[in-house]
Image 1 (cartoon, rainbow, N blue to C red):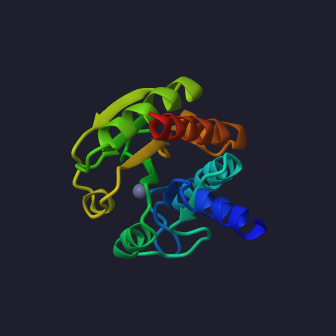
Image 2 (image 1 turned 120 degrees about the horizontal axis):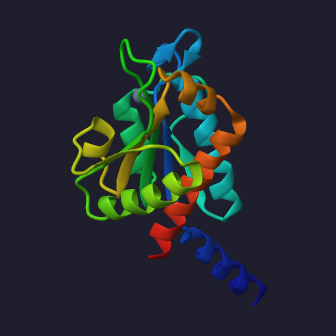
Length: 193
Ligand SMILES: [Zn+2]
């Protein structure tokens, strides 16, 4: 009896959705930057907060990197595919040359079925949690990690590191937490839909 109930508990745990989180860049690849503010660090800080929320909600979470190391795009896709993730979310920051004013968030969804819904759920909660400017959803994106994963997938540019105002926010732990909460809420709504 004991064995059986333990077994059924394990089975239930196995069925928890597996979420792949992908903090962009890392190591020798800083991503976009402004002075000593590197995209790779902002990506990791936000993604770690997101990981914590989702793990707290009982989801299985796999990070393509959890420290400052370089992981090539092919390897990120491999991690998502080999772990048979149920969905894939990549976190990035935006930048513009000679422009310190443009700000806001962008989201890209892949061609895989379900990706558009995932992006829309995340978008709704992310924008309402942060109050960030809506720079739009780009559907059917062929960005490498989106084009090569087979689960619902999206990539979020959570702000402009080149914007004086937004950069301050992106470096602020409370704002990072709001971003993480917004994305987590969207993921949960998508998984429950
Ligand atoms: Zn990036």
